[in-house]
Image (cartoon, rainbow, N blue to C red; front, top):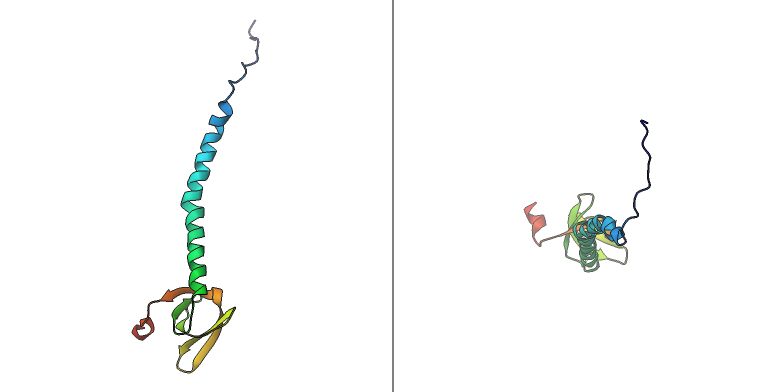
Length: 106
């Protein structure tokens, strides 16, 4: 009559699973090289910069405060932001190491 019979589909060929995962593998590789690897590199550079801080360096903090480092301890640094005005900040709050002489031009 009007209803046709439904038959099961033929089994899939072996090895087709690899091709179904290939787009996900390609996306993961692109994700690694475009996002994860550069972020790890930047974190390593920031850690090296914070470790190498010494008295006399000019820095900018994440809060926008710029000044000259006068004292460095294990977790904190003392920054002179004006004549006879010093503040203590955590080391990881330092965002940028400025070139020498930057404070004179500000």
